[in-house]
Image (cartoon, rainbow over the protein chains, first blue to last red):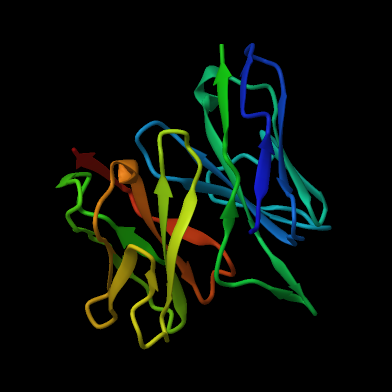
Length: 121
Length: 115
């Protein structure tokens, strides 16, 4: 089956540092990946849509200079939280949509990574 | 705009019994997809079942079935023969026809299975 990995699984950092989170599709190619954040006991909130080879599309209220997204290949998207602050502490989850070739992306299923728990001290 | 509503923040079910988790949606799209995901305490999102808006039959996947009532805009998840391992958060989500592959999630329902 389709597997998506995230690295690291959890990270603790000091306020003011930058943290990079990787999202990889292990056995399929993904032209589109999504980044979500989830606060405790809340639902997933879409942050941005990551498109391979082009700029990410950010949801309203998400600072693009704060959350840098790079989708450099068909199997890797990265989210960098720049100058992290305690309020950035959250669970970050990515998902990927399989590329079916001929410009077609799967429209039925997104495969989610296991998530990254970020704690900013 | 799309909206997903899950009105049950938490539910209990006795082991081996069936349980229905409610989900209603609102969209102006003619073509859309509905999903259910399970999120255990580990945090991973596990895909359970998918229903397309044009699918005439209700989707089923093992112990999971989706009670799709298009006119009422509801897509309830039915879990039969509950198991202790079913205890988790359950999220209903929708992908709209004009939203690309973007998913909109409901607030979730925490299911607790009692032995």
